[in-house]
Length: 304
Image (cartoon, rainbow, N blue to C red; front, side, top):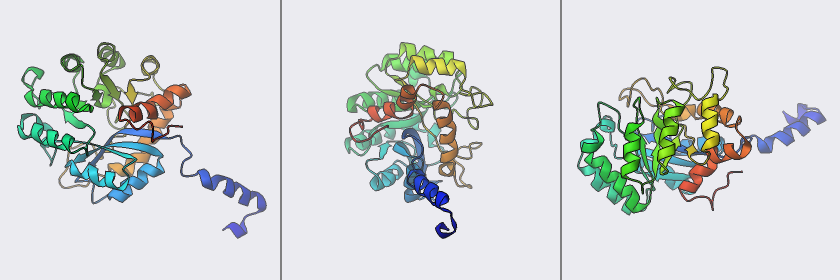
């Protein structure tokens, strides 16, 4: 192929090749899953290669079961952060809150030093107990404070009250708010951030294909003014994640593999697009620095 190029073509090829892989700025993905339904589609080595391809310098991985995250971490210990998930099989996402062994397993996992957080914990209405009766959740939040690791919580309500109550009762626990409330509008998200210094909002799955009721952007891809204003007001409080679960019309399919990792490029193309509409320093904070700092990787990983 090179022999058939003219001199200008050869020069252009030489200039482009070294930068093809990392043409995009480095980012940190604070919401990755590696599940039993993904193994047949994406091997641990495949997953690491995809992160490298997208220039994701740090990935926070939730394994289902938890040990699967360690398989990725063993291949790229500087790149992968494993957080402990109590989910072991399909259906555990709505059973964990009633399982007395959840706290025992979480304590052992954190004590091992192999996990740097807890989550993702689904507290969706109809499946999880009210906060007053959520004994397991409260004990996990207390564990987060004890071991000084973040706890990722997924709420999906029309009001921010649940998160406001959680952050108020556990002010010493770093809370990662998966999807920043999923269905909540920017005003409701701001209400939580204004009252909860210990809450950081994740933006995983806030894209045109998943949580579509309150998107970050217009159909044309323009960052909506309300979200932009919120990001500029709280640049140190947001982080981006891909949440590579696909398809999403049925949770934890037993008869169909999850191909979410194959969608990683699409998800991050979307996030990079709206990040580019922010001032460069804010985009770097939200896209990389905040997550890297939270998990204590600032010395090892560079976000520029």
